[in-house]
Structure formats: C-alpha cells, structure tokens
Image (tube, rainbow, N blue to C red; front, side, top):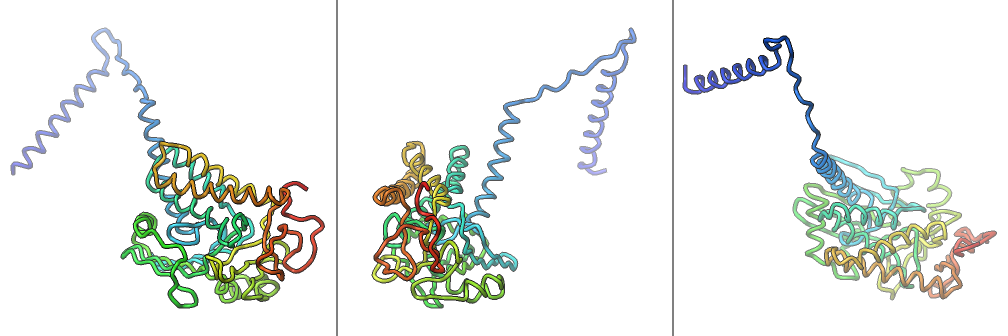
Amino acid sequence: MGTGTHHLAAVLATLLVSGCASSSANAPDSKGDTYELAQPVPDVEAAARAFKLYYAERVERALIAYNRFMLFGDTTFAINIRKAGVARKGNTFEVVPGPNDNNSIGTSTRATWYAYKVFRSRTAALSLQRMFEGLYFIATVSGHDGVTGRNAYPNWTLFIDGRTGEVKRTREGVAVTPPIPVDKGLEALIVATFFKDTVVTYRGEPKDILLNYMPAQEVGPYAVTYAFTMLPEFLRVSDCCTSLMQVPEPYLWAHAFFSNHNSRDNFPDLAFGYLAAKEAMDDLTVEEDVRKAAARAWQAGQMVGDLIEANGGRIMTVLEGKPYTELAVSGVVRPDGMTEVEDLGSMSD
C-alpha cells in the first residue's frame, strides 16, 4: 500500500470516529433522555451580501447585452431604439436598429443611473457615459439646438471587432470620419468592456435599413410607407407620426438622420434622462468622467427646455417640404401632408 493510500485510510478512519462520536451524542443517555441539536442561526448580513452580489452579477450581464443590442449610434455615444434585427453566427453578429417611433432613451438612462448608485460598477459607469452622450447627440444632431427626436442615426455602418479592438465606420461602403473626434481611450475601454470576444456590425444607415432590409423583413410597411423615399431631404417612417430627416450641409452632423415630430407623449421619456443627468452631475461621489458626460446631457436638456419655453410651451421641429432653416411646431402637419386635428407638440392641449 502506497503512502497516498495510508493517508486516505487515516482520513477515512478519522471520519468514521467522528461519525460514531456524533451518533453517540444523539443517542439516548443512561437515563433514557435524548439530546437535541440546536437549530442553525441564519446569518442575515451574509444573506444580504449574497443577495447584493447576485444582483450585481445580473446587472452586469444585462448592461453588456443592453449595450450590444439596444443602444445604437457609436462607440462613445448611443441612444436606445426599442427594435432591432439580430443575425448571429457564433460570436459574430449583424444588428439592424429600428426604426421605431417610441423608445426608452431617457427612461433607460435613468434606470442605469439608479443601478450605478447601488453597484458603482465600471460597467454601469461606461454605460452611463454612452447614454448621457447620446442624450446630448439627440438634442443637437439636427443642427437646431434643442430640437429633439424619437430616434437618430449618425448614418454610418459601425464595425466593432472586440477581439482586436478594431473599429470602422463606413457610409455606402466608404470610410467616414466622425465630425466630433472620438476619445480613443474611452472607445478602447468601451470595446473591451461590452464587445470582448465578439464581432458586431451595426447597419446604421437608414437608406440601407428602409430600402434594402425592410423589403424582406416588413413587406407591408415597406410597400405602403418605407418605399416612398424623398431623399436627400427625408425618408418616410410612418404616415402619422414621423419621418427621418437628413441633416444637410453645412451643419456639423450633415448626412445624419433624426426622427422629427417628437410629441408630448414621447417628451417625458427624454425628460427622465435629463433629470438623471442633473442628479449625476451634482453628485460629488460619482466618477469624474461620468459627471462630465452628465453635465453635457444636462446642457442639452436645458437647450430643449429653452426652445420649448421660447415657443410658448411647444416642441419644435423641421417639417417635410419646408426649408430646413425654418422651425415649426411638431406634429401640426403629418408626414403625409394631412393637418392634425390637434398638434402633437404642445405640452398641454
């Protein structure tokens, strides 16, 4: 018998002796009485720590998935579009975002802010940076500061290779440079955090989405709405509520698209995000990078509020068929040219 076998025999013998001792402790004594073992006392504090750890892990997973499949725009700024087509082959994905009328741009930002306050994770912090910058983007992309939209696109196909860290942006197959320089350090952190070991192509060009993807994906809406393009001014998204307006030269975000005719029904969603930004900006315990992004979002929120107040409590937009330089009350005239019974832009009817 080898040394290892001797050691194993010794351990087994010890366990047997312990077992016998335990058994005798529960056996009747000489008087016929039995011993009762005390019930274990739960450690409430340990259970609370385990509960928090469990939900911290769940939140981390949810945020990674949300950043990959529900936030769109670019690496360092993004907004929620609550509709996406996803094709997968292994760890390679192709994602087509929207378009969608009603989204959770501000609401999801607020939810992430509250998750950050509890867990203070780097994943939540980077998510907030993307989302706060997205709130700035949607309030400024049109070139008319304070004009909001239901969604917006920089109008490029975004390729992210999380294995190598490579990021490429193309428009109609040609490389494009963002009009605002990308923070490469932040981009690298975001790619490493949310796209590790994955390759994702975001088809974020509205012309491609509506005229190439939708004919096979949504035949009915394509036939009656999407097929009627009025480029380069706009693409029809719905007859009742919105078009994707293309930003012309010489505006900073020329060639980008934003969904006009935001309404009082959608406005509270954005307001939730801007209010979360104000709270984050003023919280000195928050990481500096997050506070900086929150301050930009709050600045955008003030632009939105100022424009509404300057126009008698009405949300403003750019109308189809009118000069891009002119602003009008949102939702007065439908994209199909009909006049609404009541406008959708007034904050009170």
